Length: 126
Image (tube, rainbow, N blue to C red; front, side, top):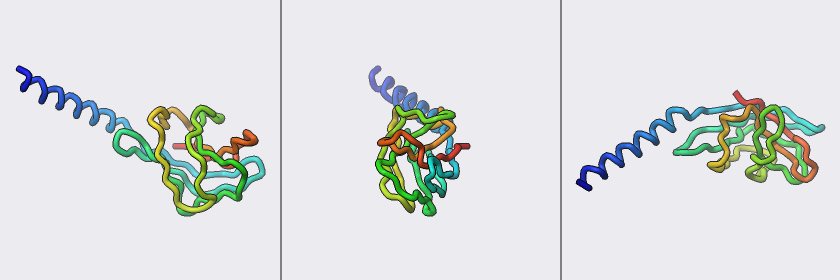
């Protein structure tokens, strides 16, 4: 009886993973500068495996600021979504998105100055 149960459990688990992946969306947006900073380029949030990754484009640029971090927002920053420091002010960058953040629940992506609590760059997601 156990031999029959295991394949069924495995099949159910695989179906569940497929169902999660079917709902995954790719989001993207173009940066605009904020708080007297220049920001440009695009951000793409792509489904991978059972999560997402954030990719800043090769033409990404931020003119610089102290303590820049990456975050999401819904018509304003959601500070509980700050998930990584910006690695570089220019060029392609890839970040793993923590599983606790569902990017489909947000309509904005931020480069955020945590030290001064101001946006440096903002991309509206679609």
